[in-house]
Amino acid sequence: MGARTRGIANNILANGLDATDGLSGAVSSSNIANSSVTSVSSTPSLGGGFEKVASDPPSPVEGDIWFNTTSNIVKGYVFSATPASWSTGGTTSRGFRGGGGFGGSTGAILFGGSDGEPAPNPNTNVSESYNGTSWTSAPNYPFAHRDSAGTGTSTAGLGICGHSSTGSISTCNEWDGSGWTGTGSHPLPLRANSAFGIQTAAVNAGGAVGAPEAKTAATQEYNGSTWTTVNSMSTAKQNAASSGTQTLGLVAGGSGYPGVPEPTQGNLTEEYDGTSWTNSNNLNNLRNSSVGMTGTQTSSVIYGGSHPTGASNATEQYDGTSWTTLPGVNISNTGASEIQGNGSTTQATAFHVNVPGTEEFTEAVSEVQVKTLTSS
Image (spheres, rainbow, N blue to C red):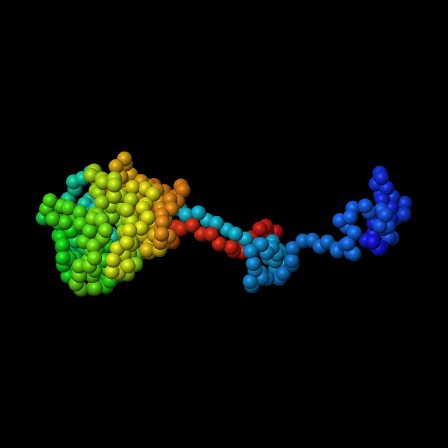
C-alpha cells in the first residue's frame, strides 16, 4: 500500500493507538485492514470558515455564504418567501353600494352607487379619488345612478351604463383625471354589467337588460367614441368580475345578484381574445355577485362575492389556465359588502362599496436574494 505520512501513530493496537512512538512516521499496510482505504495516496488538509471579502460578490449563486469584512456581517444568497396578504387602506367618506370604479392601487376612482346599507337608498352621483393612502372628493358623475361598470385608469376612465331613477340606461361617460364628459351611448340599456380594457379600447360584457330585466351574453367593444357589437359570451351573466385588455380579457363568477343567486353559474370563467370567447376552468368558490377582480388574463386575483349560502372572503389566483385558492389570504370584509377591485395581481385594491373601507392586496414574493445571516 505504501507509506502514509499524515502525522498519526505508527501502530494501531486492539485497545487504541500506540502513542509511545509519537504522531509521525509511516503506517504499515498491515495495520489497516479496511480495504476501502487501500487506494488513498494522501489526506487533504481541511479548511474552515467562510470566504472573507471586502464587498458582497457581484454575481452570487444560491447557497453562497461569505463574511463581509467591511460591515463585519455574514451574508448568504438564499431563498426567501413572503406570503400574499391583505392590509387595511384608506377609508371612503361613504358607502358605494353598486358603485363603479377603475384605476390602480395608487390611483383609483369610485363613482355613483347608493349610499350604503340598508337598501333601498337613493342613488348618488358622488365620486371619490384614491391616491394609494387616502380618499378625497372628486367631481360628481353627471347623474345619480348605481350598478354601472367602470374601466380604465385614474386619468383616463370610462363609466358604462347603470341604473337610474328611470331604470337601466345606455349612457356612458369618460373621466380625464379632472372631470366627466359624455360620450357615445351603449347599444343596450344595461345594469350590473362588466368591463375591462382602457378608455380608448374597452370591452363591455353581459349585464341585465330590458324590463323585466334578463341576463345577457352580449359583448360590445369601445374605440374611444363609439360602441360595436361583437361575439357574445358563452353564457349570459350579470354582476360578474372582469380584468384584462380588449384583446386579452377575463370574466369570472356572476350570474346572480344579492338575494337571488344562481348557484349553477357562479363559478364560470371565460376568456376573450379580441374576437371570441373561450370557456376556461371554473373558480373554486361560488361568487354570484359583489365580486372584485384585478390583473390580466394570465395573472389575476379574485376576491369577495356572495353565493347561495352566504359570502366568500377567500382570494383566488388565476395563472391563465386554472384558479388556485390562496390559503388564509382573505379579505376581512366579505362579498356581502360588494367588492370593487382595481389594480394588478401584484398590488390590488378592494373597495368595500356597501360600507366605507379599503383593503390592499400584495402578491406573494418568492426569490433568491442576499440576506444578512448574522451581525456583529
